[in-house]
Structures are given as C-alpha cells and as structure tokens.
Image (cartoon, rainbow, N blue to C red; front, top):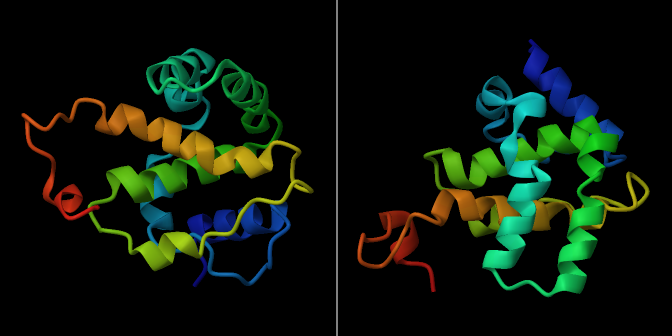
Length: 148
C-alpha cells in the first residue's frame, strides 16, 4: 500500500525529471517526511548560508554563486523537501549511511533548475550547524572516529 510519504517521494523524483521508478532517497523517507519543517527551515536562510561561507573561508566569488543559487529552494518546493531529506539522512538519522548509498544519489539536472547542480553544496553547508559544536577536546561521536 502506498502511503502519502511514498507518493510525495515519487512526485519529487518525477519533478526533478529523474527515472520515475528509481529508488533514489527511499531509505529514511518516511522519517524525514514526518519531520520536514517546510518553509521554516533556517538551514536555507540566506544569513545562515552567508555565515557558513564566511566561517569556511569560501571565496567571495563562490559565496556569491551559492547565494544566488539559493533561490532554487524558493522556485522548486521539491528541492526544499529533498534538501531536508538528505540533511536528515546524513546528520539526524541514527542509521549510518554507507558510502555507496550516498554515492548513488543522483546529481540534480540543470533541466530541473539552473542552480540544481549546486544542490549538494547546500546540504554540506547545512552540516556545519550539526557539527560546529564538535571539537576534538569534546570528543567526536563514534561514527566520525573512523573517518579518514
């Protein structure tokens, strides 16, 4: 039986113009679907993105491209939902994601939106909120201790 969350995922894959029957982002979809903050997600706030670019010493030219591309999430509601799903899977879901699983996530085509190729950059910038309180003196969570 297809749930509302399953239907939303299928619509998202179709909106992004990917293979309609693809299993992209299926794992954890129900959980991220129920926690989706909608328009109130501050991880996509322009001030937050600017601060993250500054803290990472991203060049002003690249920061300007990221700032301009951020409107992708205003133009394409499906991108906002997918952003939350990827963020949730990588940084909030207690299940570890395998490298192969994440590697299989498709790039969003520029036919979906001109800024779509930047999509995963926003997911990684959002990770700064999740990991910024971590310092070596506080100890890293076990899932990060084996990353090299």
